[in-house]
Structure formats: structure tokens, C-alpha cells
Image (tube, rainbow, N blue to C red; front, side, top):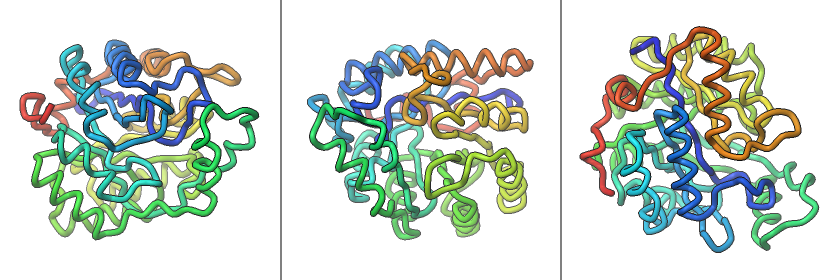
Length: 310
């Protein structure tokens, strides 16, 4: 199983806004349908955010998560992964609410603070559907996404220890790997780790193949290769090329409309499943095999669907 590729699909996220793509899932019905379709296409893990169904604004409201999580659980065997990143406009308490209430098998965990900037995307939008979108996107020029050691330890204590949830440890920069190594040394996390390294977000690591090699070598040195499963995602147009290179190097992969709205140059992805099918086709042609949700649970030592709170 360790040689099989785990595909994560990030269904909607909090970066892209409704004006950027008509295919971005916004309502609970859309999120559930898109997630189920992605799982049927081959995603073993579904990374999930919620949005206000009235205007598509990111929200951490557990009641909105409850409108789609049970449906996804009933229709698929996929591992459900709830964000603790939420959105930059949320407090840490707001970001934690859904995972703390619903006790999923997995939750995301950002491993450091950063300038998380996507304000340049506003230049491409001529007409905005909702009033909140433009100031939200442009505001990232002057915002910091805080994830202090105190924040990280609190999430680990309350959601990890308290709920039996394991984490997708998101590393947007080289320093975040050192933060993760510190947390591991403090015995606040136990292997196997699931380390999601992220490329192409302004303020974090650039989407250069050379960075993949450096990150892999650094993670091996700091964490020990036997202690973690490596996964990568790349933002925007870098999604498919960089995940393919990473998979050749031994990584797992993440795709989805949270990370890129496109399927190829100039063509919007019509669904999350489109991206899952594409990465499976590319890696399948290279002779790679893919982990089922059950195999991913075994590899990552997850608690199973019978122990979640939804």
C-alpha cells in the first residue's frame, strides 16, 4: 500500500469566489454532489470547506457542514477531512468550530503564519456577483494568515487529542517543515504524518521543480522518511505539472477546485471529478496505482467512519 498514490480532492476551499467560475460548488447540495462525484472518480480523501449558500462566502458554521457531511458519508467510503484553515477573515475559534463539533477522521492544520496573498486575481474579474468578493480578494494584499505555535498546539490538543482526529499538515514554506519537526520533537504529533506541501501561493513557496527536491530532502532529514507520507498540491496552472513531477518522486497528490479552477489552459474544470480523472489518467499512464479510501485509512492510521460526529 505504501507505494500506492493517495489522491486528495479539495472541493471548494475559501480562496476562489463565485465570480471566478460558475462551476465552483457553493450550496450544500452542490458540495455534496461534487464531493461524491470526486470520490467515485477515485479520490480517497475529500478536503472540505463550507460556504454560505446565499452568497458563496466561506463560513465555519458546523450546521452548514452538517447539511452535506452525512450525505457524503452515506454515499462514499472516502475519508472526510474538514478544514481548520477556514478563511483568513475568521478567528482561530471560528476556524476550529466545525472540526471540533463534528470530530472527523482528518482535519487540515496549517503549520505556520504567512502572507497568504491572492489579490492579483481581482484584476481578472470584470463583474462581481456579490458585494463581499472584491474587498475579500483585494484585502489579502494587507493581511497575514496567523498560525502561531500557540494556535497549532491548541488545535492539536482540542481536535487531535480531544477528538481522535489526525491531520493533513499543510506546509506552505520551508520554515513550516521546521515548525512541524519541532511539533514532532515535542511529541504533540505521532507518526505517520500526512505532510501536504503547497506550492504557488504568493507568500509561500514558488512552484519550481527544484523546490520539490529540496523539500523532499529537508523533510527526510527533519522528520525521517519512515515517519511521514508526502503529498503535494500546486496552485492554479501549476496543479497538474507539479503534482505529476511530485508523484514521480514518490509523493501523493491533491487536486480540486480549491487549488485550481482550470482543467487545462483556458478551459475551466466543470467539476472536481474532472481533475481527479485527469491526474489518474496521467499517473496511470506512468504505471502508478491508487490507494482506496480503506487503504488510505490503514496507511494514515485513521479512526474510521464509525467514530466521527456526523
